[in-house]
Length: 277
Image 1 (cartoon, one colour):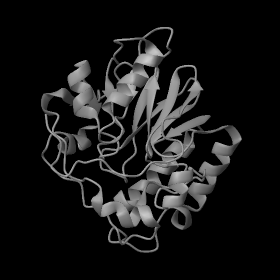
Image 2: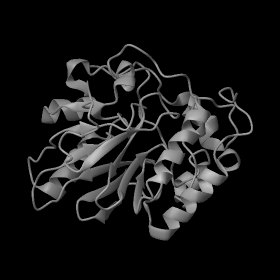
Image 3: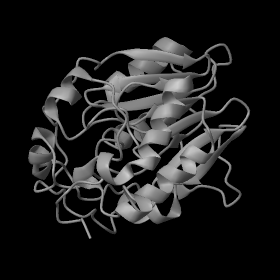
């Protein structure tokens, strides 16, 4: 296994870094610098799944987090990925080596996780703030997990997460997925939509809550991105954990998702950028 040659520590950290939120008894959202991971599983059972794998260099922090929540030497049943961008797989190799657990992702994301294809380069020309301008320093080369990664089951289920199903939500990346539990309306949205304006450094650092589309500088298919948000809004989720920003719940979530669907072009789609049709 190996990372792309451009993988490196990214010097950007929000006020929320190192903070965890028990969104539900069995859903724990935790911020690593500027991105969220999630632990799905009840601590009393000792069984859990890790959703996404944080920023480069964060493996020790993630391992420490899991052991503090689930006990020493605990390990997940699996690592499931919403997608393979650098800030969601930054510690994946060290975690797989430490835990020896399988990794699952959508089949369309596998080329970026097996060393076959690089993502399109981030777009620093896109409308937005300082984070968008910083984006050329973000890694876009593929990580190679070899046989350690496999595609999700065809039936929509998620290994180690009974009661949940994955939903293909492309746009931000070809194989982006979100995770949904119908019994209580819980949604782990990844970057299909986020609750902070990820392009603006001040808002990222302060974590000012504001619903937005996927991060602009890495999103290449805005038509698909809009359709994905529409699909998630139809689910009428009760709570959403997103890849960036604070969890959003209840009426606030429903109202903001409806607002995002109704005004997607104004809220999410940038006025200019190289991936704007």
